[in-house]
Image (cartoon, rainbow, N blue to C red; front, side, top):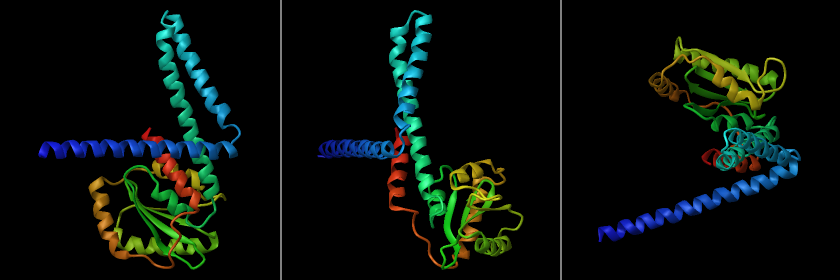
Length: 242
C-alpha cells in the first residue's frame, strides 16, 4: 500500500515538474516576442553571440584536429551566451519602463538577489513619496523615491528614527533618480553590492528583530510600478533557473 502511494506521489511530482517546465518555456517565448517588438537589435545580438562563440570553439577544435567533437560544445556555449544577452536586454527594458513610476524602487528592492531583508514603505506621503528599509551586510540602507524636495525631509526623519535604535550600526541613505547625487533604478542593486560588509548574518537577524517594532508611517505604496513589470520579473526568474 505504501509502495503504491509512493509511486503515485512520484508520478504526480513528475507531472507537476513537466507542467512547471512547460509554463517557464511559455513565459520565455512570450517575453521573447514582446522584447523582439521593442528591441530590433535583440535577434542580431543573440545570433551574433551564437555564431561567434560557436566559431571560436570550432576553430580551437580545428587547431587540435577535433573540430567536430568541439562543435556541440560550441553550440551549447553559444546558446548560453545568447540567453544571457536576452535576459539582460529584457531586464534593461523592464527597468527603463519602471523608472520614475511610483513603487518602482520597492519593486526593484523586493527582487534583489542575496541575503537582503527588505521592508517596503516604512515612511510615505499621500503624494506617493516613500522610504524603504533594507537590512544586510552593510547595515541599514534607506532608499527613498519620489519628489526630491519632499523625500529628503522624509528620509532625514526616518534616518533619525532608525538611529535611535541601531546605535553604532552604519546607516546609508540613497534617493532614486537620475540627477546629480541620486542613484538610477537600474544601478540600485550595483550600489548596494558595492557597500562595505559591516555585519555578519546573525547581527543582521538581530537588527531586523530590533527594528520590527518601528512599524510604518504614512500612506501605502502600490505593490509594483506596472502590471507588465510583474510578468517580466517572472521571466527573469525563469531565465536564471535555466
